[in-house]
Amino acid sequence: MDESTTTGVVPEERSWWKEAVFYQIYPRSFNDSDGDGIGDIQGIIEKVPHLDDLGVDAVWLNPVYESPQADIGYDISDYRAINPEYGSMEAWDELLSTLHDHDIRLIMDLVVNHTSEEHNWFKQSRAGTGKYADYYYWRSSDDGYPNNWESYFDVPAWSFDETREEYYLHLFASEQPDLNWTNPDVREEVFDIVDWWLDRGIDGFRMDVINVISKAAGLPDGDPDSDHVGAEHFLNGPKLHEYLTELDEEGFGDHRDEMVAIGECSNIDPETAIDVTGRKSSAIDMTIFFEHVELDRKNGWEYEEWELSELKSIMSEWQDAVDDGTWVSLYHSNHDQPRGLSRFGDPDEHRYESATMLAVWLHGHKGTPFVYQGEEIGMSNVTFESPADLDDVWAQNHWENERLAGKEFDEIRPDFERFSRDNARTPVQWSDEQYAGFSTAEPWLSVDTDYETVNVAADRARDRSVFEFYSDLIELRSGNDVLSYGQFEMLSPEDEAVYAYRRVLDGADHEFLVVCNFTGEETSFQIPPEMTYDTAEVALANLESPPTAPDSVELRPYEAVIYRLA
Image (cartoon, rainbow, N blue to C red; front, side, top):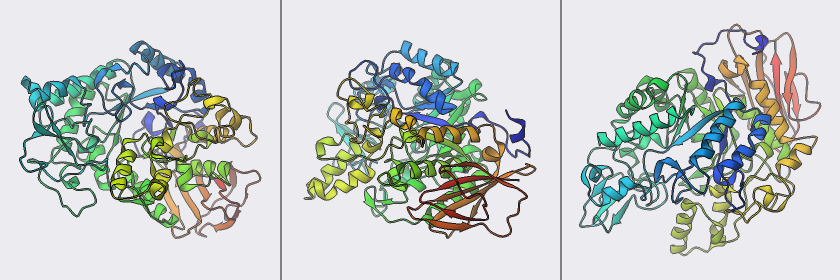
């Protein structure tokens, strides 16, 4: 570690995951090694040098467990087996070893709110077999659904099972029945799975929708006028912290000091984030929050205009929460979101500029940055010509509901092109070869039509490379305590064009000023006169010849500059 970057007082206990940059891999769409049109583990191994060149410290791997793929792996049928489409456990072992050889850690997805309906537990449960009978939520009802809860996928949260002749609860797709965490046998099964994977040498878990595992006793009806009916009875439920504490002690156990646990917490607010990362329970080290990626949408699919000051307000609130004791993942794209470049930037006129500006904006905050596959070359949203192009179960349900309401596909096509999860799930574009170099066969999901110009090979050959800029940005952050641990201060919160902030660490010999133009127009910015410094230098900029006097700068469209002030 460069000693020049470590001066100052680090207020928190050091953790490798606070100083790391993560890379998220959606395996089905990353790289296909065997020519069947589906990405696989061997394909990931082939591209580890790409990750090494980028400079990331850890990989979050979306589910590769055995699964019928109703929700692309988030419906697990066997937690201790690899889905044959992706490879074998031997291939997974090779992946772990290869990543570790490159000093890259591996984080697995932990999906334990629900399983697949094809899991043996559910098969035994629907048959009423012994202890398994109560592994899931079953209810009888003579007059419709047992309660009025809605699932996250625009369908009722209950489905009727013909075998057991009862309804079962599923907060997601009907193929994903919810586990009954009130049953101690269920919790023990989960803890055994967690321990089994940690013993294999992984470096932690990303925990899927972990804050919905506790449901209110009796499963009462929810407020029918709420945005998500029933949510008040399963979000951050009554025994959440009890279950998380037990998971920490019985599941993570002796592995706790070396691993990281990242909690995806649905509808989480800053106070709850502080609760689950130490104030009330400590199983979760950092949370994945959603407010910034819900800024432009309401009711799931409806677009809403937004202003930069709103984004600043949201991010400031979460930065305050980090100062108050929680930790957060920093992201603008993932497998459940449309591409951040299409949402916050301009891939048509300013792809390089806005892609790199967004990288600077995000990575300069306090928290742990996550890079989603394809983000590092500026991949963007796609188009959908017909309902047949939709693979995402949530998008399919939305289309079916709108179709039954009398809508034509072209009327709601903008919904999908703006918000469908399929936007982020198209194959990574490696080259201008057929199928973008992802596969030699037609991929499971169509490659974006811009692959001939937007691909890894083409980007890395350019003078202005998104990939190379990401690599430089990650290198700047690496080992720099001011960026990892320094305090955050928003500047000019009402400015609707420029997003600017400071990072300051007590006792350090320098601070950072980050200035980002969020528009396609030239604009100017002037820092507050109370900010003083002796010298200033450009630490990193996305355009050549950036303004060198940070007190008053003229910014070109989507220009971003990080200044080191001494």
